[in-house]
Image (cartoon, rainbow, N blue to C red; front, side, top):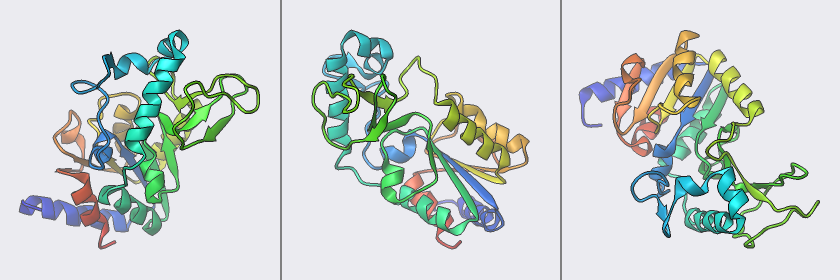
Amino acid sequence: MKAVTDVDKVHRIRDRLRGAQHVVVLTGAGISAESGVPTFRGEGGLWREYRAVDLATPQAFQRDPRLVWEFYNWRREVLAPLSPNPGHEALVRLEQRVPRFTLITQNIDGLHEKAGSHNILELHGNIWHVRCPGCGTVTEDRRVLPPMPLCAGCGQLLRPHVVWFGENLDPAILTRAYEAVQRTDFMMIVGTSGTVEPAASMGMLAKRKGAWLVEVNLEATPHTSFYDASILGKSGEILPLICEAL
């Protein structure tokens, strides 16, 4: 850590964690970027001549499912060789050392599970899962799939089990996330700007319920001034420091 103030913050966070009964961690794209996961939005978010945000919609799938599956198979090929980084691994150790732990993630890459985390709520789904719109079956399949994969049970065309733009989050997962946020006494927000709902309001909800709030992010966010502690930098460097002496 470069600044003495950051070292002090790490010690304060550790002290708080030692007394925490239910820890909630919310993660976003920042923690995955340190493993090499590309950002599929904004600049550099092109696949062939298509914008990723234009393919990740139910309308695109209805219009050209083969194209959408080509895009998601390409994403699978990109993600398959990637490994969890020290930030993911630190959260695994944290889960093992606190009485109760809930990991809420906006990421679909499956790296938290690959690292060894267990109690994970994936708000936006998981790219390694497929869902049948007909019978509703969800299965894990880590292969590069056929161009038009079909459900083994009912024969309908499968789709990626992810939340596309314009779709609602799974209400059961969202309910569990809100329950955890309202009951936690310590919440850490990692690698996310906290500007996209519903995740954006989870930290402030936890704080209103009395939780101690920590932010770990590359840069300041609109909520930084409301947090009890904020450390700016790479989560793969900061999280191991926080968790090493628990």
